[in-house]
Image (tube, rainbow, N blue to C red; front, side, top):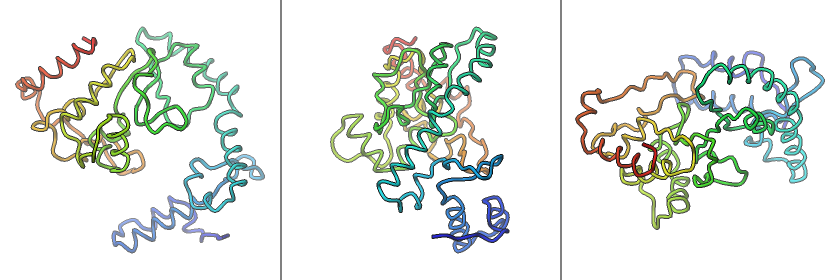
Length: 284
């Protein structure tokens, strides 16, 4: 179907402004519908060359892509893969090798790249040349076709972690998608039966331990995920633990520790458990 939006609603920012202050369910549904219509395109014009187009990021998740024939999907996928992952490799590699060596050599600290999401083919070339550590998150596997990464296959020159500031914590990730949590419970953790709706402390401890035992040079466990292993101490509201929601411009970095340092120093059972996990994994 072809359609044209009125000028006052033809961008997401204009839609946001038009619905500012409107909170009814009808207005919310209409606003989301307009957002979906605006993004429901496969190609967008180049701002400098309007007669040329490039594939829109994540277009394959929209309704319009689903209406294509299998042959059309294959053609679009080929264009998409080439544009985002191959066509500009030499350009981006040259840019990186002109700028990054200066930054890497300016410090004695180890450098880690946030090589997640859409990563062009040239990124590993640069990281290998400059000995930059990769970031390994099990729920964001880098091998095509995998639902979850295999911790035992993490490269040594890497940092293993459970989530970043832009992602939900372990507990939040578990509760936001029951189907995915069930797959992780059965396939990764090798547990039988139905996954618990909320991940218990003993299971959080196992996930943390698996990361500590991975071959990654460094393993960074967040405060929230350390606390998740003790059901008496972890914060009751899972959503409160999240640091940032990048898709929500009104989400503020409001997270704060709910225990003082003095209170934490008195948590003997938790401190012993953390010390044991670190020591037994050889990371002390």
